[in-house]
Image (tube, rainbow, N blue to C red; front, side):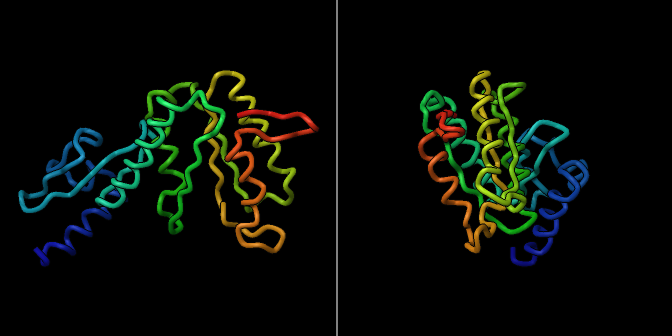
Length: 193
């Protein structure tokens, strides 16, 4: 089995790079059909496709699939059992550059039935581009407005660990209260998510 490990690693990288059909040819199943693809009857490569074409993500390792499945299950559980609560769902996703921290969640959220179509307001914010705490107000206002129209705001804060006011992860103190309490104040008015 150890002689197959380099080939398996190469095939997994090709699945991620090229997609299931191109990487596996006629040996594989169509993306999304089955989370397991049999290659040459010698070993099994786990494959799971997330998202709705054309924006899809192929996960080709057990660790990736477990991580993305956990995110999907966590979000579905929240939407089905706690969505009416004022406290928002907060998920931290950390990883190396290029590991799918931003793209993966977008693909996963788009495939969840409760978020399909115009039910989701996807709001992206790169904290590395922010200069002062007031810069966050437009993001919070957009999320609050989405709630007012019956849509679920999904706010992705990229570069969450960026430096602000000389502190690594300096933005965290400005995000904790809205994330935990489900509201923020703007011009002396309380806005809820």
